[in-house]
Image (cartoon, rainbow, N blue to C red):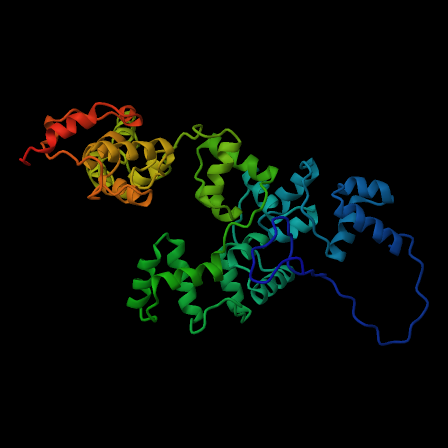
Amino acid sequence: MTYDRFCDLPGDIVELAPYVPTEQPICQAPLREIAFQANAWLPAETDRLREAFLADHSLDDIARDLGRSRAGIASRIADLGLRRHSRRDWLEWEDGELVRRYGEEPASDLAALLGRSVSAVYARAKLLDLSEPAAPAYTGWEDVQIKEGYREGVPVAQIAQLIGRPFAGVIGRAAALNLRHDCQPEGWSDEELARAFELAGQGHRYVVIVDRLADEGFPRRSARGFGQKLRKFGYGRGWGRAWIAEEDDLLTMAYATGASLTSLRERLGRSAHSIRWRVAELGLRGSHDRPNGFRSGPDWSDDDNAVLRRDYGKRPTRQIAASLGRGVRAVLMHANRLGLSHGYIRSFTPEEDRAIATAWEQGISLTDLAQALGRDAAVISKHAVRIGYRFTDPARPCKAPRSRRAGRIPVAPADLMAPGPWAAVHKKDEGRPAA
């Protein structure tokens, strides 16, 4: 076994367990002399075939080297149950076989025939604008992978991507085979899991799913425990698969045609973060004609972006969302796309630490300091305590002024980097009663 129990799969794995589709029955009759066949496979030829196939040689090259036809080579590979993850360019005859058979035969069978991964077959089929009118019947190889994956506790999403089947389809097939996943939580019924994954696939948050399941008569679960068990059983984490050329081509085509990335993400087993990272690597960012996705809300204008850049982190997000006529989540997601950092969560820089120290020593008020740094006063106060500057400390060298802030000289961040005239100003204002 090339993978650890309950761990994510290696990125280059093509099968969980070997499967030989044809098994020769044991002959009970007395052995007789076997007739000579000129095209019989000798053990040495089989070894050479296996070695060349796993070395990613093309079927044409293998056929030429062994003096056999390409069809004979493909048939022998199928008999041996060999699979690989080829990185070669697609040939004309391979595209022809894919066009002729896709939709009629499972993608896993085509992957074995062409010496490709299931992901490569699916991506190439999408590039050729092929579709599946109906899901083909599950093959013996697919059933073996599902059984092995369930026995070893492999996340269902990774099993689905490995064999080229939808997530829900794998769960349904496992139920038909009377399989129980090794990570299935104790006390959870198959019906509860199926319903939970259905709601999760619709994009509901875990707290919403927990309430919906409880309303439907299932036991109430805690949201935190529910999420952990669901991820361990079904979704897993991103498992480090390298991007292949077929996936890059499919992603490039999606940006060129303005197609939705949702189905692409689901069938390729890629996360939204992985898609965005690859888009940046390929230089596709900004080339999609629908950069804001396929939602029904209004597009973000230049004026909206300017408001967000100006106010994000300085005003409450709910106020920004209300002024723009958008939801809080939409504002947060778009701010993340613009690379904006929220004042409540961004890290403090060494320069800001020096500014806090200067303000503490020279009697600058916490409110003036927060305005100068563009941060929330409560956040600055907590960080100042952590680095040894408590603004309410009785031993502070200079007390903060008690005069109206509107009547004080505004503090600039650059002025806080070195001692300035602020101490004298604040000492002058110190004895005035608060208005």
